[in-house]
Amino acid sequence: MSETTIKNDAYDKLTPQRKQLVDEVLKNLENCGGLWHQGWTNAGTPESAITGKKYRGVNNFFLTLVAMANGYSDNRWATFNQIHDKGWKFRTNEQGKSLGKGAGAVIEYFELRDKETKQPFDRHVLDGMTADEREEYMKENVFPLRKYYRVFNGDIIEGIPERQKHEIDQSGYSGRAEAILKLWSETESPIIYGGSQAYYHKGTDRIHLPQKEDFYSMQEYYSTALHEVGHSTGHEKRLNRNMGDGFGTPSYAEEELRAEIASMFIAQDLEIEMGENHIQNNAAYIESWKEKIKDNPDVLFEAIAEADKIAKFVMAKETQKEVEHFAVEEDTNELGDPIYRLYVASEHGQVRQAFATSFDSREALMAEVGKMQELPMYSDKEFQEVSLDELREISAKNENAETEQSERRKEEIKEVQSEIYIRPSEIAAQEIAARAVVGATIATVDMAGRGIDSLTHLSDRDVVERARATKSGEKFDTLYNGGSLLGSEAKDERSLLSRLAMFTGDEEQIMRILKSSGQYRDEKPNAYYQQLIKDEIKFIEGLKGKQTSAPARSSGSGKGGHFGVNAKS
Image 1: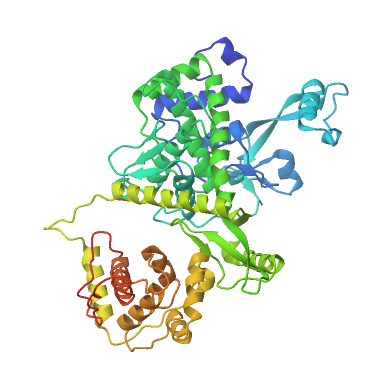
Image 2: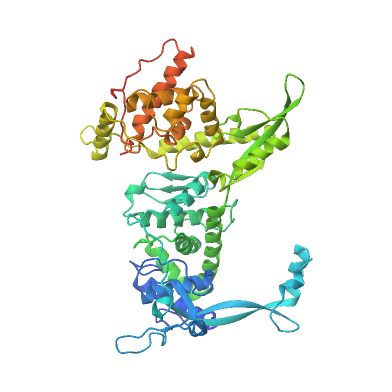
């Protein structure tokens, strides 16, 4: 037992594995100022080398600590019998001694047994029962039996297949983590960037983080963000957890412990490396954790169990499909025959007709919906039919959400352009834009990953289809697919944008469609295109008589472009 561990009845009742886990945690708290060794690399969630099944809860936590302590880089573990059955063997050191001696880590699991026969429980007995009946039967006739296995890490096993390592972006960027955080901010607890502190405010149900560039590394950013996401799961509309009596109190320290362990579990699932300063451990929390765990080790195991629930709740977002709502309206044509139209919700509060044409039968319309669902762009979406009134309500909610998000963005972006210092990226953006509008050669754009099939919004596809259906549809197609009609990039860009502006005045929608076309060039700053879009919308509005006069249009000099601190370089 560790010197830092106080012997008491609660500790004595622990299994050998749990005693070892408590000792390791207390040693880290005493020596490292945190739960983890600093500078360790996350090899991923510990898993079985045979089945690939992930270890969860206490086993995950324990094997992770063992891997840290021994410097293991492999996340796979196998029992002695599994190693033998596969024809593998333990590696040896320079003296020829087996590395397996004393290197086993004990894991626990619970096997369900029948109280009467004492044999493993056959779940087929529950077939045909209701949920309540199953619960009652399990309570009266089944008991859990704790069992143990000793497992060994893949780093000390010779013959084990080479592990398929995921590619790590050297910058620390993780697309999966970004997607989780974006979805969490949009559908659960909004994430507000700005300021110098990271915290979750339960009253407003918002997460506050410094700007990304204020963190020492991307790993540090993800660690902090996931920690705060862990806190936000305690809200009553999620896991409804007791989050303590306020900052600095002992009960709040327990919540910090849950969130800290949960952030590690989530990072493992996302296969991202951990920062050296995984949490800025307040000295009061460290002391509180030590004293609580010494006094009652169950505090640690309860925190691990809660952290496992948190991680599962958050990671479920990764497999959650976005819902695409639609409504079918039945109407009659001029002959009195029934016709059917498909409507979809827009994130800008509009209800749009998805197809330019109507259908003679509901079956024909739904057949087209079925074809849409088969497209790769909709593979991660779930189509759900609602009434037209419900669709309007959803559209209104989308509009409110978009407005709130816009306001949050205004809060987040409070940079003021310096009159003395201009960032090199901004200067480069201006030079690129200037060269682009003056250059004589028109660069060909690779359409791979672009085109109408890359558009994920039905309303965007509708705009493209409507533009194609006009008398000059062939010219639109030429421009949309990257061809040139007017002999210069700037003129072709404006021509495409003016055609789009005939069907929508939504700047963000036009930008999405532009990015799917062959006229969008990655090397040009977004600010350049945004200004073009604004100009073309005003020009078209002038043609439609919505303004007394149309603004003067540049022939491609680029003098009207605005490039601020948010210009893309």
